[in-house]
Image (cartoon, rainbow, N blue to C red; front, side, top):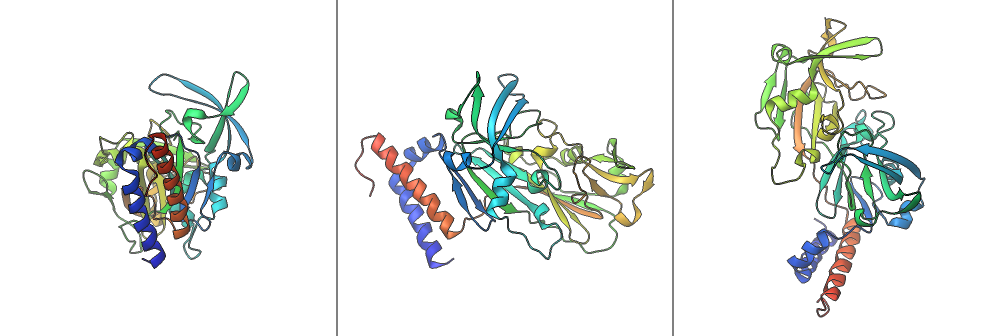
Length: 353
């Protein structure tokens, strides 16, 4: 750790101690006033309401299910992908489609977390039109979100609204790091490991023992097993105490040549994204041969970059927010200091040390 990073870390501890636990608890439910874009990006930045309003705007009407019944909203928003792309997502030019191994973790001020794979958001692949909404039209009048904070993520097309992160405070870009390494050649089995209740390996016979589904992409009809059903067959290690913990999880598929692609469990879950992705073992009734015994198929993607051939591993893990660069840490600490000062002032306490 550099001297600057070390000093900033110490400053964070001092500020947290000065604010006190009760103040932090109050801050956790305070409506957000800015969104910090950080992590594996070249240009960490923050957006307040005026900053979001200055970006290209989109009007979007969404419908989704919730615990209180069907929801219908009309939002004024800007592109989630556009905001991330403007920050300059770091990729390795020597790795083919390295962007597909990335994810972004959206976190609200209450700690609620949802992970999105870059593959589902990228206009060249999944092309999901997820947005950052900062205003809502009610009775013909558009106004800021108020109790939903400065912005919320929208995920049009989702069955339920679990991925609509309100009071958005952070968008942290990270990289999927699979534990399985490709050894080359034609695959004959793949492992499922990580945050699962049962680490397992699947060969052709085990894959065929799962319920059969079909998907047609172009002129090819694939036969295989549901990607989601296979993951559920080994058990997902979710935390019962964390609301919608599943939505903070990622699975990364690795081929025998080391090629990898990440998927969010939110995009695969029938309760949310409901994407019909499958792990295929036949194409037009014929085994895959050179593509290995199993291949990921993503029918709704524009391009086939996430169609991982010669599958050797599926790693499931909880997405984490990478440690920000020193400049981002300073920005975050400044915001934390301001929150603590306001809360102290609100309680009529003496000035913070």
